[in-house]
Length: 194
Ligand code: APR
Image (cartoon, rainbow, N blue to C red; front, side, top):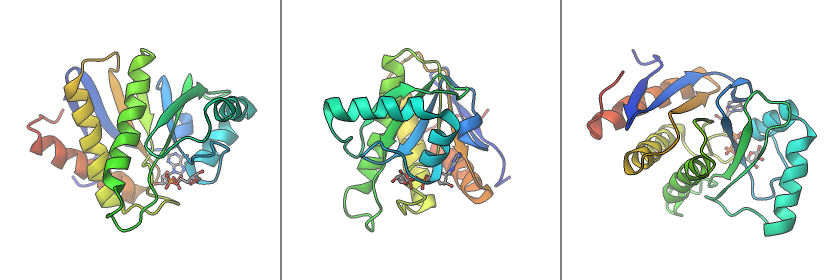
């Protein structure tokens, strides 16, 4: 049970967990756990730029030239180059400093600003990685609670074009943690599992 992919429906939007590589997803957008420079990096950021090719970095450079570095908790949208998804939404999660530096609010904002951008662009589906839990050091169990709560709260508050939201977790442990967090958060918020 602990390891099972989980799905809940909120306001006609399906929210689920899968284990996999986000660069292979066919949702209309995938989210990148970027940094404020938008110049690429390691982890999922490196994987997305490698798989998508130089068009993504080109557009990121133009965005930074226009509006400067991307603050933590905000999001921007670019083309996806060679990826199957049409768009990449780049957001910046918080670096973990022990939990007393507004980390959960900033992580909530990273998820919700990404969803807002997807809705503004009338997108129907979006995939998220586990933002901040790699290089940025956010403990996975705490991040999973924040992430599932942030997405469910957003979907509950507004009816949007978004019909599918997927958490794409790279490793088995992160997948299991998000799956059980989604079940717990859904139960707390009175939602039925699929
Ligand atoms: N698909 C899905 N998830 C992935 C993939 C992939 N291809 N590659 C890595 N991940 C997972 C990691 O295993 C981790 O669970 O993404 C999660 C987030 O880890 P990071 O990519 O390290 O992201 P984050 O902690 O937000 O740190 C951001 O890292 O690479 C730099 O430029 C990036 O400076 C920024 C920082």
